[in-house]
Length: 435
Image (cartoon, rainbow, N blue to C red; front, top):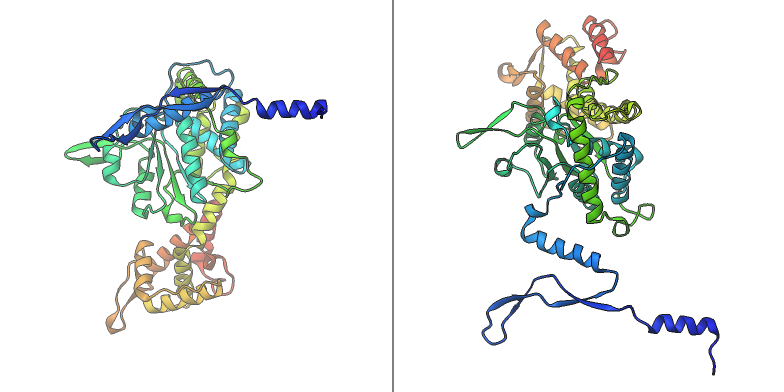
């Protein structure tokens, strides 16, 4: 029976296989059948014709496991980058194709990536704090590894690891740190500026430079290093692109590295002399914005960072003003307005737990824990006889409470029931408005 023409063509397509090439390239390990000793060889792999480039990438990945520093993406030359807008757009598209992000987050990552090429021209090397699911967080770090200047991807962070880093000019650290402590976060924040030295066997080192850190899914404000851009990644879903289908090829990575080097060589002095000033933002966020904006040369439109960083600043302010420290201050302020001569730590703890319950929180705090929180806030208790430790509510202490409460935008400072006639509240409300 004769087949219709269409069916015949389909049959030919199925039965005629693509030519297969035999290519050697990956070292395999096996045992010698006669001596049982371990040996190595490079067997031939079957690769369909046209897929040679993909196989070469696999070989490169395999070998890079054994010599990881040799596989770090670095420029091979300085290539003309075109325009700043064009380079920024290419970077943004490359990042968006790899990771599931909001438009705001992908733009912030692009600004930060560009800034990693200019730490020697900046007074501040902004950090990057990444939160979200573990897989997506790791994907951000691996994407940045392809695009940042002299990247080093680290599995964790501690002082011995940092001391072993070769701190030559321009190193960008990309850190997987979901268990990072508050102390380490504070230290890394200090290394965003020059001059904070660390002693290593009698030799002092400066760990200044850009650092991106994946902090985990739920991040408390105290574990976010100061002077950091904060980015939250989204869990992968049907709305996100398929990473495997959009990953950057080795040629694309090399091309971007070379263009970024070209941008650096042409604009280093311009970045150093930049007068960009995000005066509308508060001190810490404004300093980060100034550093990011300085790296945008000959493109005033791209320097509009305020609209991107304002929501980040608002969230930071909310976290700051609703944490347990702020609740402790509110409780202390409430008791301060009762005109007591002294207040015991136990009384403050009781008020803290009452406020926590009103806020829908089930966690309670002991007097000992509240005492530590007061000390952290700069409110130092003393022994008040047999009753225990507490605060003497003299004018100096009450002034200090109001001053710290203003910094934390404490709710107790703006309520109208207990502090309507409190002169200290009236004075420090003005401070809150300025901040």
